[in-house]
Length: 298
Image (cartoon, rainbow, N blue to C red; front, side, top):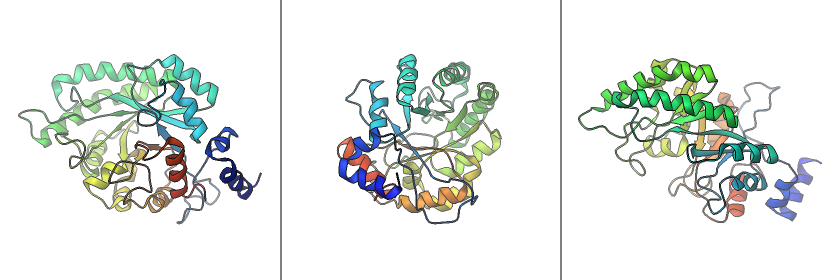
């Protein structure tokens, strides 16, 4: 079936039928040079099933994500999840988990008093990642610690990551550190924007410790999304998105995601992009609008 007939069929029958035919959406027609003329530089999306489809039992969200057109999913904590059912549903629907949260806001990795617990939890989370086939997991630096400067907290983050980078390598799971924003969502968090995150990861100096580069947080914290990506792309492990304001799907706010995706393709990013946003409308309407605004459909 040609691309044109696929588009016509999609528009005639609706998103659910389109997805059910196993025709996954992908970014096409992006401007900007390709890194390799012979390489398919399209980008796929990973739906965050904590923020979408939360009215369904957790494991059932995987199949529903596939119906909406997503071949990948991501989620937050793994401790409260039935990992076996995730494996079963992913296999059944041919969906993959891109990443989950292996270490959250508290207790802070930015406090050395928590480093023994951090090491133990990262090893457990790596085993969970191997079980469900996830190649990455997010680790959060932590909220502000009483009596510590930001510089001190960042040094403790570096120490903590150095303690676990060999564990990540042993299990083949990349740890992706996520900078937040403090203007809108995470006031009191110790790590925001790309500059400090890039410095921290360069000091740790491991292919298994990179950045969860959430474009929503970066837009609020610093803007200049394409410029900052160029500055720190060697430390990008994973990209997430949401539009701003509102933290809804692309096309609802101020970010020109078509332009940002073109830059990612030019830079050579070839992993799925995490859709860590809330739908502004129904799941079907918001996913269809997002695919359209990203140039995936007409």
